[in-house]
Length: 491
Image (cartoon, rainbow, N blue to C red):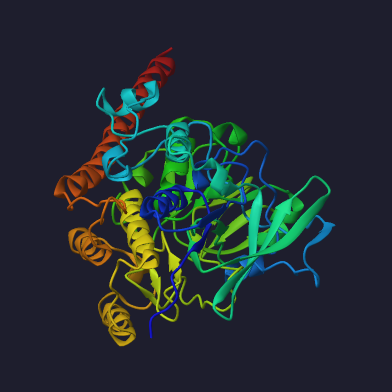
């Protein structure tokens, strides 16, 4: 039995995934209504720069259990105006003033919209005139430009949070909340389909550690997640412990150590933890970084971090967690989250139980913007009736077979290293544009993958070069001090 045609589509989020989803839907030229809801004040997603300091962290037990992002209670009668909620919603970004991309601009860009060649002096000094990395402001402007130059601004409702999405009969009931200065306005709209492009780098994961929340209570702001890091200047002269062995922890620890901003050495919790597969652990080998095994407990009274090997780090001022994020969908209570991933997504896009619910961006790192583009075009093609999906049983088997290979966890979402196979399968499913309707996807180019990997090597070489320079500087300084001591002893 064929389903009725989709004419009204809601899109959740206007980060890179949402921006390209809007374009893909608009280019189908078959939808009567495309409504886009973004809880921030502008487009950009995690590339938006916050104008106020992030709130202090609370409720550490829920952060550890990945249950912190609970839905708000919905007014009994809608529309309604109610007092503003003070519950944390984790909508702040992870941007700090001098943040730059850690991936080459070629694999980050959409296929037909190159990222501007704006390079900072800092990036040129580190990586040369041909540096492939871009400042965060370039990335936000890039995302906004896709919206602005195609006239999509009128489709978007900013400062509007999607609080509930549920199927009522043949329609999707979408409960919305628009923030005001003193009160929030709640209302309902109905759609034939929903595209979820809200991202999953919002709710911080912080492991359960005895004494950690008491440590934070005694010194508010002393425990943060990497998404709340706003630059090295906040840590002048402070003894810092950075927890995590992946990208954000590496960048922050290296920054604090190499700049000599924090008290030296900068302590990291990395021993026994696997380094990021793309970037390796070279950043943590900086001579001013001291690596340690996991934390056993924290003593709030003495500010001592006790380690599992029996050693400890005394007089700690700040603990920064670069420990990743928790997938949350508080607006979709009927959609399960399992092992920090969303099950039942065929090709990471189509919700098997109902193909009028689709996801863009439900994947791990790697060629992300381009993957978003391919997923967005597939989602738009499905809703326009162009894409021919396999049977429900075949979609289920696709997931089951992938679980056998990748496991039923975060690795399930990692497209690496099978980028070409995934891109081409999604392109084939989406189909070619017909009569000028639809966004055309080019064939996969292995140069994208090569640029992606070359960018990682460039960063690893940078860490290796700087680490060696610092070792030589400190060795020379030690020799000078030894020589002065010998001369002084002879006097």
